[in-house]
Length: 572
Image (tube, one colour):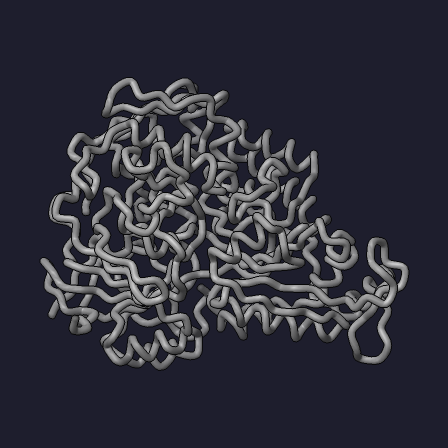
């Protein structure tokens, strides 16, 4: 074991601990907090220990004691499927992560802890990881879980279809070997530092080989009738209505879960979710609109949990993507004009009601060693936006929509009009963006699409001009950022390089950062990447978000992750 690698791991542990709980209103561990004010901002070692993890009438959402009952959860949209290995869509992961496991989980300070793997060894300065799997895990259909499931899940699914895993692990991974049914080895072409941070149920859910092998993982019927190893197992899925899960009596973590049943009920409108919560029809809200927080805060039976960790990923930035393959968006001056026309403080105030912060760089401040400070981000300056559009050949008469006059690839007289594609739950972003861009002569058509349709239209058909995506940066840029910028990630994998951005120097810097062990040196490389990204604007970064969960005080021990209900219990 090289001294540099050990030193890097020690520093990583410290930095990971610093990534949580530092902002006002957040918590360091998944325990109950009193209601936040409406203006709240939103160790790895060579060898892991083998410590066991801890851990027709409408039902009442909190009709439970420590050993049973039902929790009703509001979700914003139909997930379109329940296989989190084939997508990074937050809607799919929110609805399905309770059904699955990863090799490891991440603890309260984002440290890797055992899950399907009870221990692991890191050798050859991080080029070889050997995982020792539990021998008491079965799939929900009774089949034993083995190393073959891990190998299949990575080689045939995650490395092909999960955008963050494909972009990060894929380029450096040489092989996955299974010496026996309880051992799996990942060998990399060079030391690969972030692996233990990307093996949880969000980044690398393991699916059953005996059900998926020989099929198209995107079309397998098990996507809608899933079989996992998780704390809850599948009962039923009624599209656009509800998903019913029941307690897994054979779950490998002794004594868990406590709840008998979790029902995920589709309620698209946030206001309707809050009303259902107040009426006692729902017991858990993934998000609470800012205007409702003050009222709920006055209710002594309501608890809040604020966290940057979501089922779809951590440290998320609401990001506008420009389709660089479209003539209008290919002009840097137009992208710069859009950036200058947007008042991001208003997004923070009017959409998030002060929960979170305006993005100051392309990489989240939740990854402090990689987050670049002092970048020359485009400031809100409508006059500069107008000047840039004039220079680019977009003429304006009066207060109307601009038209083309000598714009390359665009017929003269064509209006400066384009689409903005978004999830229905992000409609407030679209309305505000359209209003702000109208002021400088741009005509924006909002196109709300459910997540599965959005993914098809943006990443397969590439039928969009602009969009907004909650790009989750995770705990290392290698996991959640590389996929957005590296040219090898242009393609049909959802939530990868939406802009179709190509820059050889950016590719080179990402590749160098991937094989660099020293954290300070990696941070310097990521700063160079961010400087180029801010200069070229393939994306524009609006706000860093935090999640505000709400639940009843009769319940406790929720977690902020996709396994939010694994340890939960409620009093009657």
